Image 1: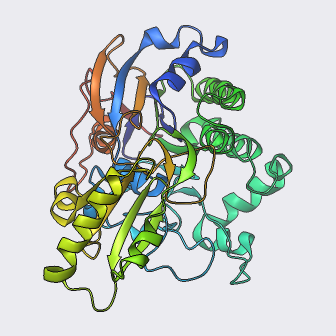
Image 2 (image 1 turned 135 degrees about the horizontal axis):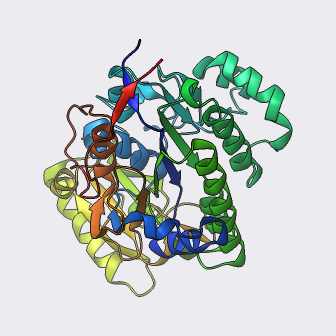
Length: 413
């Protein structure tokens, strides 16, 4: 006799970059007929600053903003000069996570391509990780070092033919196949499954927010979700959520050039449609701080500059972002990015119109028909923990008002 377990597994499915309209399309798909009426919806979920995948996913699991858990950008800073030097690792995230809390309570947890979970001490881990060409890293070895080796080797033997490197939609198909394999184990499978799907995000980056390719990616995501629900069984609880939305792009913000012209000792670390400004040697707050504020104000007011606004140090502290070293976090206007130009991107401040994401939940302990207008992605971790009667230490997010009660427990045999 082991610890009690939920009557069915809990599936937390992150469909990267979905906006409320994308989730409308997913839930309206014929393969998910009737599901929307059985569940609850939080229409607009506030994301974090900057609205990037890794800060957001760390916030989803910790219930805390980036400044608290420590992942404030996808990339490490200062830049190492190597490719793919990102915050892949659980060790980069400070404090408790919902995965830890559920595991600590005696349940089995699987993480399939969930950002920042490489190296996590869970039951099954397929790390979302990339290999550096400049470092001559081998992706298979890197994944095995930071995942669950036997699980990964057996998965590659059974499902490796689905994958085409890191390309979509095949990577999501591979991840779904692994998740299905685990869920079909039923009582030997995960009690909590964390799954990150990137097909929609990839389509938006390459084709645009309202492109045919994006709609097709939403439809593929709906089919994957239907398969997962079938494998999980009628007692499963599912949360389908995003981390941020995206906004179409046509130009680049040339702020680095303007800073150089003004001889301001500040460097730019782009974060998509956001950018951190870091002081260089010789930067003096009393002298250069006012100069920087004046330059940013004048630049923002120029037609077509692409700068919407920024947070200074006080603003970053209030928003819960930054690593304590940056002097500003910039926000691009619609249509602009600080990074390479793609058809659409993200990284904006969370109050930027159109960047909010959304959430849907259904299952035995979800209030069917509940409609909540606004929430925060910081609320997801505490909600996951509450479903297991666990406590997420240090969370500032709140349990979403979509639960009827905690999941009924039964003995695990």
